[in-house]
Image (cartoon, rainbow, N blue to C red; front, top):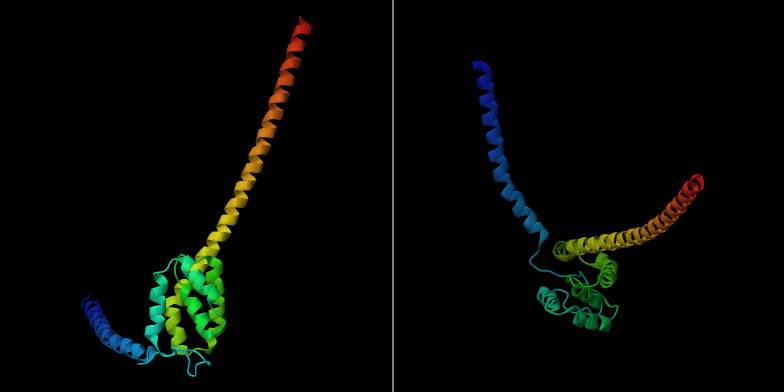
Amino acid sequence: MRVSCFFIAVFFLAGCESLIDAKEKVPEALETHTKTALDSTFCLYEKPPENFLYNCDVNHWIGLWVNASAQPWSQRKQTLDALTNSDYDRLHAYILTLMDDTPYQDRLRAQLAFNELSPRLIPQSRKIIDVIAGAQNNQLMQFESALVVLEKENTSRGEKLITLQSEIDSLRKKLEELLQIEATLMDKNRSTQQ
């Protein structure tokens, strides 16, 4: 009994020791990850396309996003309609469509345009954009797509219910007519027997 208690105590202390070592190593791992994930500068392209302004100006891009968030969809839509197919305008369009009130089709169109441009971006900037906006935007589009499918399914089922209800009403009328005919025949049969 004493031997088993001794072994349990040794395993317990060894477990505690390994937890302390693991706890001390976690901050180092997080610090290393943070240092490698973000450099001191943020640029979208290694070599930006011609006429691509504000390549390394994160304040400009955040400013566009903040301004877009303060605008209603109708105003952002007018801005979107005026944009071209340049890389700068594609990124601008993507930012304009990140708000929750953007219709699904416009959000999808901007996401697809951004997906074409994304492989040319620096991997670090792609990762940052995905973490800040991309993952949530894609999830929102998946939810909206699922809602559309469910809405179509509900509409289809509603139409089927209406059809079935009309068939039930028709069958009920026929049944009432048959019951009426049967009642009439039974009355005639009784009157002839008397």
